[in-house]
Length: 495
Image 1 (cartoon, rainbow, N blue to C red):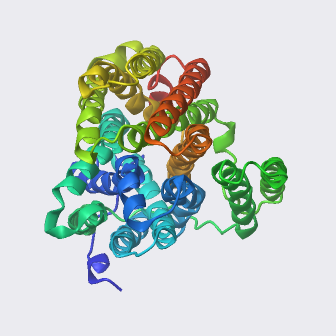
Image 2 (image 1 turned 30 degrees about the horizontal axis):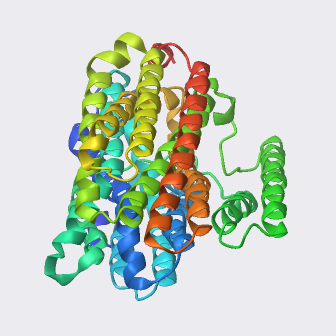
């Protein structure tokens, strides 16, 4: 056993304990460090994928799998990771996941072909799924209710900034070619972050687990994993294979398997057996509404980030650094939006702040689409900066408040599983968005001739279609957000 995990650590206070956990803010920094590692590696492919493809080979399908190969196991196993934290202790599972994630990052840096990288990315995703849900559960345990809004207010912006900052960092590291490592440095950067996170977590995270150890539901895990694989696999592979009949059969089968999963879980609950998901969570309107909004919203943002990054490099021939610099206003204005929400908009506007953020982001994406369509032959970074900044501002306004709303009704004994389900849906949205929007964009590109001019026109046509789908998904998120309560914290204070 790692000697770090054997240190004595204070117990986290229960909800009945009047004194909050003393080291809660330092512990929060360790949790955020893990979130940074996860989201950097979940988003670096937006810029790194074209360079990796040039070095290792493979087609556009390989690019999609380099991203979906990470997010799919992450999404599926997050629910399991939350349950393991409830069973064996959230601090212990956090340390195991963080150490394994850092080692898997090293493995990604030494691969020699695209499918080795995809396999290493899948391992990374699985270990990240063990690490991340513990953080959400620990926040609910460590912070008194009056401080949870501030804690989640820090959580959301760091998540969003990391998600957008990943491509920016990737572009800098690739073009800098530090120590002649090229694109491999985007994975090696996780090693110092991982070491710092492990030290802070071992030193300051409290021991935390539920009083009664739950049991494992292997049948439910198998059903939900199979159902999601049957959905994602044909979405990613279909366009390269010209959509054979089996792709549609597989997607239809995924609906049946996921329906069987729901029936199986209900049956286990009625017989008093353990389930993959605490079905009591599914009876909480605020939590369910948050899941729906998160699924659709993150599908749109992830699909746009990947395809826009690939378009600027593979379609227009821009360097990774230029691509990253062009997308930097997204990260900067995301922080501005998150600060506005945490300081003013969230408390004063409640649910209206979510709608405001989504509306601003829709305007930004419409502006991006108009700009690309108008300047398809002479597009510059400055042409895109205003619309990208508007999009980032809208994303920042809504992202932190969404997580606070979604977990407001979750009980302490459900917090590990609830955090796992919420983040699983977020990552599932990433995977579906990459598969769906990537299929639209790369499908158009694949049908065109191989000349440079045809390729540029194909990429422009593809990205315009993809951005149309993004706008539809954001508009759907806007409508679904009406299912959320008007105020995020009022109910939780009396809960």
